[in-house]
Structure formats: structure tokens, C-alpha cells
Image (tube, rainbow, N blue to C red):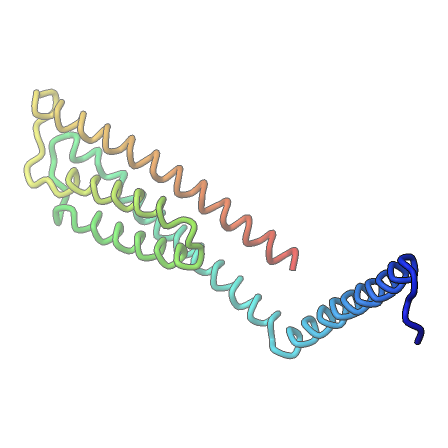
Length: 184
């Protein structure tokens, strides 16, 4: 090998070395990608992905079922607003709410971006409980009933806003997850 004598010879040598390094990097990237795919196939990545996808689907199904039970308890407010206490107090509401919250928390652990929204939603659900636990609800069309109903409407509005925000973020997260899984 001759040692370069001129500036042009040094630049030509640097280009030749640089081009050789670029080719080695490209070859390393291609080999790395092929090895990564082969390792994932042997390591069971696809089975893990399918199991995780099934787990999210089961958790979502549990949330929907718990939400239906909770919504049926939430609809019982009409009896309280007519001045009649609920049988067993608010035990039915509390039980349905706890089941619903547990199922939402299980799903949100897999999608941590929903943590702020689920906290707000749980607080709104907890605030609604005081309307179902009333032992002696006020008689309709009295001043106490108007105060009770006004508080209920405010808390219900907060509940609806928190639910909408939570499900919007949850749907976005699930959609991003599905697109990620589909893209992989």
C-alpha cells in the first residue's frame, strides 16, 4: 500500500475508508434485523403477543359487563328521587361500583396512560354513592329535595364528564395498542 502524497490522495483514501465503514454498518443492520426476527420467532414473541391481546380483550369484556351492572344500579336513583330509600341501602350500588372499579383498574394497569383519567372517574363514582346511601331521602318538591337533587345533578354531570374523558383516553390507548400490534 502506498502512502498518499497529495491532498487529493488523502481525500480519496478517506472516501474509500468511509464507504467501507458505511457498507459494514448497513450489513450489520441487515444481519441484526434478520437475527432479531429469528430470535423472536424462536422465543415465542408471537404467542406472547396473542396472549397479551387476549388478556386485554378479556379485561375489556369484564369492564363492559361490570359497567352494565353498575349502570343498572345507577338507574335506581329514580326511587331515591321519589323519596323512597333503596332496599339494603346503597349496598347494591357499592358492590356494583367496586366490581366496576376493579375491572377498570385491571385494564388500566395494562394501559398506564389512563391513570389520571381513571382516578378522576373513580372519584366521580365515589361522589355519587352518597345519593344511594340515604336512609331517609327528602320528600319530593320540598326545599331539601331541591338541594338534594341539585347536588345530585352536579355530581352526575361530573360523573358523565369523567366517564367520557376516561373512555376517550382508553379508546385512544386501545387503538394505539391495536395499531402497534398490527404494525409489528
